Image (cartoon, rainbow, N blue to C red):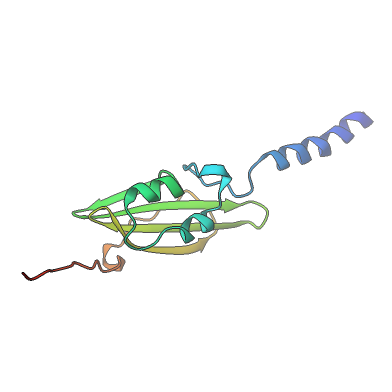
Amino acid sequence: MRVVYLLIPIAILVLGCASDPNKIYNNTLGGGQKLDDALYQIQAGDPKEKVLRVAGRPADRQLDGRQEAWQYCQTNFWASTHTYAVIWFTDEVVTGIQTRRSDGCGNYRTVDWESAPDATIEVRHR
């Protein structure tokens, strides 16, 4: 019986260390990268391909005409924090990023298109 009591804490320790404390839900970030680190590599004007390479596939994707919003969530189990990020695109180019802290991942909100960043449209007169 003593062996069982000893094995339970060891099993919890091993399983806890095996799980990634910065897992991105429904996404695969290269090399176990944190969401915050990925977001700092993304700039306004970057193409969607770069976002896919850096942050992976979004957990939620919403479209409205020429606009698109990708949502990500990352959980830090040790700190019990959750980071949501929305990456906004117009014509397949990043126009902005919004982040917020939350008490859980998985409840992706319907995007409020009124809060989308303004897109800069370049007009050249010849």
